[in-house]
Amino acid sequence: MSKSKRQKQIDLPRGITDIAQEDQKYLRHFLRKAETLLEYYNFERIETSVLENQDLVRRVIVSEDNIEKKLFNFKSKEEALALRYDHIISVARLYVGNGMNSLPHPVKLYCLGPTFSSQEQDDTKKRQSNQLGVVTIGDATEIVEAELIFMAHKLLDHLGFDNYNVHINSMGDASCRLSYAKALRDHFKSRSKKLCSDCRDNVKIDPLKILLCKKEDCREASKEAPQSVDFLDEECRTHFKHVLEYLDEVKIPYILNPMLVGDRDYYGRTIFRFLPEQDEQGIDPIIIGGRFDKLIDTLGGPRTPAAGFIMDLDKVFSIFRNSGATIPDHRPKPKLFFAQLGEMAKRKSLVLFENFRKAGIEAKSSLGRDSIKSQLRIAGRYGVKYTLIFGQREAVDGTVILRDMETGVQETIPVEKIVDEIKKRFKN
Image (cartoon, rainbow, N blue to C red; front, side, top):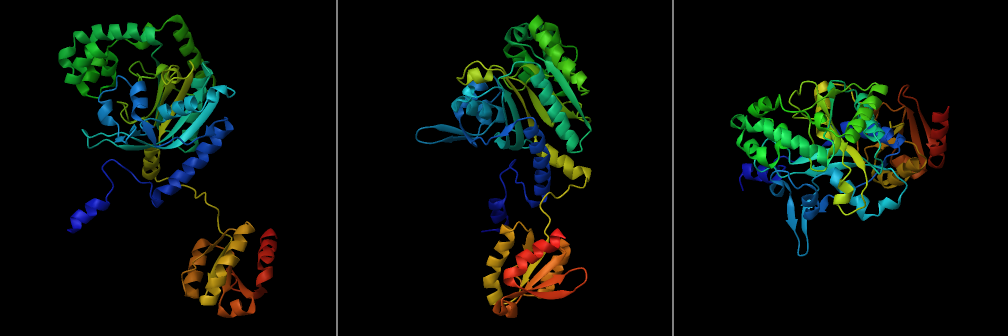
């Protein structure tokens, strides 16, 4: 087998990503900030299955182009399955399927993990996206959207991000969108020759999709299009007004973006995006979110209001990498290093090392190494105060050598007393 063929077999599939060790520090930093904030606001973490029924997605996303081709499909003898496509849908499915409607409301949930979209027609698109999903279920009041936007803003602030804008709009309910779609259809009819072929078809099928097109001619044709807020009924207009008043109250800056429409069928009323300042076309949002009051009902549950957002963790990690910012290492710092030498010492080392773990003393070791000199160099890199040296003689005598890494002073201590001795020294 050729070298190039072997390499191809071990490479990741196109558009799929790992979170390797160099990115784990970003993930740890993100989780520490996100979990602290979300749990303070009473959101509970859940884990949804990476496999879903194909019909689940099809039932919710009816009008999205090529949805059949975008799903990673699998077929068993009894079921048609797909890799998780959308965190919001999976959380709603969990809510309905586990009888969460009997819980005190609102039910506030968050989850992390990859979603998958098979983008065979475009080599530049990600087929896997690592995401944070945050959902509030069971509260129809305007403060829900404001709280979600506020939390997303605070999370980005805690991560050290500031070069982004919050874009917000309202699509209203079904009747509002019907009137708006008619106005858009009339607008684009006279401009259809300037549109791409897909958008020309959507003039009749779904004119709102034209506003999502990123092609320059279509964006130009959309500049003077009617605005959705002009077609809101009184109830939807009042709802959106209150959302904005809440944001004003907590001093969250935002941009009213009349071009913003939901890219999923389930969105209604408020929609929002957190976009990098340089992303004028809205191609690469850090966060997308909004209200989706009909989603639970669509999946077979009782009519239940809901809202939420998705954060793109791959985008977050990319910002970390490109910013050059120093990311703190949130792992516990070791207090001592355990060095050993000789077969008998190695056999007894695991038990002794475990005693330190049980005592809550963070320690490091390199049990496979035989050179005390190399092990002391490793201890120096960890910056520990003490190193324990456990050799053949110490294993026979039942002792261990305690070395002060600053002064180089060493003393011999009985093994049975070493844990208490280390506790006492760090306490002092």
